[in-house]
Each structure stands twice: as structure tokens, then as C-alpha cells.
Length: 202
Image 1: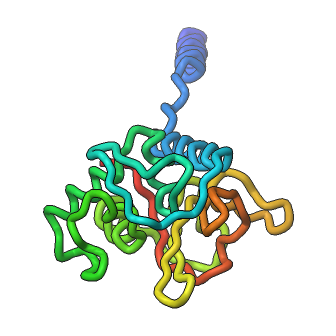
Image 2: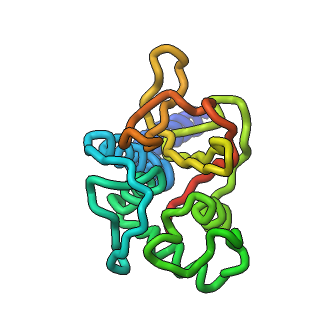
């Protein structure tokens, strides 16, 4: 009986030691990506950018409009590019393969402009990323998420949810450019939300 008790105690101590030596779970690479995307978007607010929707011929891949110019989609494009993801190239290649999936009024197979059109980004993120529910609950929108809105009169808008909360509402704020350069503002529910996505690259 004494020997049995000793064996039980030894087994228990061995199990305790083994459990204490178990390595912590590896970090979720998706969560790490979203955290870095949020940080890249916040960094964009340190840049001075005049709102300029004009057509610009650019190199390919990795092309961009002048750094002191751009629209809402350019802030998304630049934030992803900071993480090594070239939406110019990825959208263009997806449109070449699935041309009719894109809105008729936005699809031109023009690698200078197609990726800068919010309507095309909405289709691209739906096809290649996670299309998430659109809701009126702020808690459903997390840092790194992409949100699109209808501003009225056929105008689309896009921004990135970031890991900074509004002191007044407690909501995560949005980095976007709606005419005054990249800014971080509490505007999640300022307009009608038309899309909610997460995209980790291909």
C-alpha cells in the first residue's frame, strides 16, 4: 500500500512538472497581421496628403500615385503595401481571371486605376478575403477590419478600423481619407455601411 501511494505521488509530481514545462501557445498569425495592419494605417495619419482623385499613370507592380496625393482607397493600398502586399498587382491579376465578377462600371483592366476604385476593392476582398456581417454593433468591428460606406449619390468610401478607441463613444476609430488627408476619426456609423471585410493577403 505504501509503495502504491509513493508511485501515485511520483506520478502526480511528474505530471505537474511536465505541465509546467509546456510551451505557451504560439501567437495567432492572423491576429498579428491585423495588429500590424492597424499600426500601418495609424502611421498613415502622420503624412500630409491632398485629396486628388485624378488618373495617374504608374509603374507596375508596386506603382503608386505621388506620395502627397491620393484618395480613400490609396490609404488602404499604402497600408497593405507597408506589410508587403501589393493590391495593385493582386486586384489586377484577379480581374484578369474573373473579369465579369467585377462591377461593369468599374472594370477596365487598367492597372493604373482599377485597384483604386472602392467598388472593385469590395469585390476583391469578398472573393479573396473574409466577408463579414454588416451590423450596427460597434463590437462587431475589430482592428484591421476594412469597412466600406455609401456616402450617397453613388459615392463609395473605404477605411480601416484601428486599435485606438474614441474617448467619447468607446468605439474603435477609423483611418480614412475623405478629403482632408489620412485621419483617425470616430466615423464608423457616420454613413451607411455597405461592406465589412478582413484580408490577409494571398
